[in-house]
Amino acid sequence: MLTVFNALFPVFALIILGLGLKRSGWLNDGLWPGMEQLCYFALFPALIIKTLSGADLGAIELGRFAGALVSGIMIMTALLLLIHRPLCRFFNLSGPTFTSLFQGITRWHAFIALSVTGALYGDPGLVLVAITIAIVIPTLNAINVTVLAIYAGRST
Image 1 (cartoon, one colour):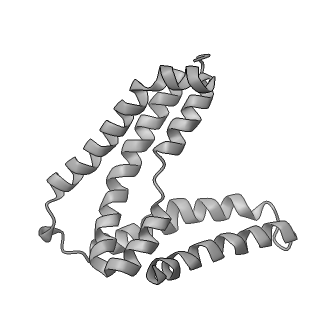
Image 2 (tube, rainbow, N blue to C red; image 1 turned 180 degrees about the vertical axis):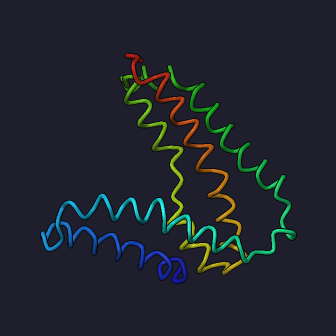
């Protein structure tokens, strides 16, 4: 448990530091969108590429691993869509609210996964998380955009 705490502490400390810097006004508000884009579109992919470039991918059954990941996503998607109507009736959810709920349920927390996996399993674990990120994020993005396009304009 202490290992997980030690892995997560820097992530949450960084979030709190960012919040403190934003609220203090010490950094210009115009800086934040650029920092977000730099981290999301440049630094994070560079971390994934660096992790995968030195990995021994021959030791991993990529097809089966990818199949398991995508199968889990498809099962979760199917279950959520099956309970869509009863869920919306029971909680009085609109279509747009359902899409938010759907996206929240299927959200992939890559930064948390990287931190915990790196602390618990080292480089071999990081390789699996990097592969997972490369498979899961585009798959979930496509599904979530599709769900948003279908349900966002509906009342239920």
